[in-house]
Amino acid sequence: MKKFAFLLFLFAFMWSFPHISDAATNTRVVLDGQQLSIPEDVQNIDGSVMVPIRVISQELGYQVTWNQDDGKVAIDGEGKSITLNIGKKSASVDNQAYTLNTAPVVQNGTTLVPIRLVSEQMGIKVNWNNSDKIVTLATTGTSTGGGTTSESGSNAENGLALVNGISFSESRLLVTLDKNVTPKVSKMDSPNRIVIDLPNSDFGGGFGQSASAGQIQTLAVENNDKVSQIRYSQYSTDPSSVRIVIDLNNKQNYEVFNEGNGLLIVDLTPDNGTTTKPTVPTTTEGTTQTGSSVGNDGKKVVVIDAGHGYQDPGAIGSVSSEKALNLAVALKVEAILKQDPNIDVVLTRSDDTFLELKQRVKVAEKLNADLFVSIHANSSSSSAASGTETYYQRSNSKKLAQTIHKYLVAATGFKDRGVQYGNFHVIRETTMPAVLLEVGFISNKSEEAKMNDASRQQAVAEGVVKGIKEYLGVS
Image (cartoon, rainbow, N blue to C red; front, side, top):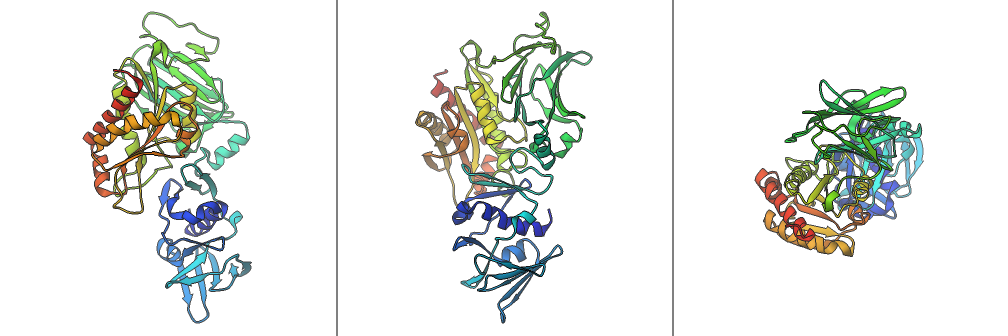
């Protein structure tokens, strides 16, 4: 993205979402996959957002000329020129007159300039997540957080279903799309593999451009006796279709559960696949059903959600990103829960992919999960902020929050910030007991280092599992 477009974007997101401007420092802004730092002295003056001139000169690298005698600020960069007048609403953009709602001012020695410019000239896509206070922005050809690129947006208009997430957990492949598709699933030999073709489909923005360009991507599968890896790519372009291949270690039976409304499950757990040939519909070599085998035999269904992913890194620490820490803990929680024969565990994501918040909710709802746990790391503008906290949104989730929290605090050893109410999308829109865990502060170097330690992650995972099992009454 050109730097001047960045300047224009600053204006756009504040103008497009004026209700966040009074608390800009509490809002996280993700641009093309990178979290931005918004200065603390961004101000709202008479309804216009004002930003220090140093944001433009120091952080963006533009040439800024300040003429104190006549009170003019000139900003030049990337072939663009803006002239602003202190105390006046008159301005110019490329020598064209422009009128501002609020004039630039000088406060306490800091020059504040309005960032309200012409948004339609920006070419930047904007997505606002009000629940989590995240603004996701993308330049042309990059995801806005809504799961589409500019190309994918066109695909959506053409009726293509967009794949937003692919994960593998408990010998089950989980695929989420923005609309329902009827897959064609087949089993092949030499080598053994299961091939899933999704007609009239393409990848959402969370997969990047390479997947839609036909390049084969892989999803690593560890310690699974049935599967060695998952491969996926855009199989054809006219019409567009997506192919997902499950590479098998040996012959396996499977069942396909097309949940409708964009949730597809390929389940390898029915049996070992060596003796009985499955019932075959005309389009698959497995059994296609509309229900799900998850939770069979009275098993409790637990959905573990690793917050953020791919172009949404979450909070950024000194050496790590929140998305990576979340996934590391989630995978360890999954590994422990898989050892319990009374629990079926499903991950919303098992690698660095991106799902919209509504897709995470959809996974839990379609599986009729018994509970939902979203794992996060906290962040603050103050590096001294510390501690562990657990959020719930509905009354039926409070007991779950309290139960997991006591074990989580003991595992982290961090300050106990308590169990709190939080109006986060994933714990508000789910109907089963649901909690959001803030393990520690990634903005605190000491806590970040401990959260990056594998043994501490294991302890945290064990604590989360203890809370889950106690709540479910599973010994």
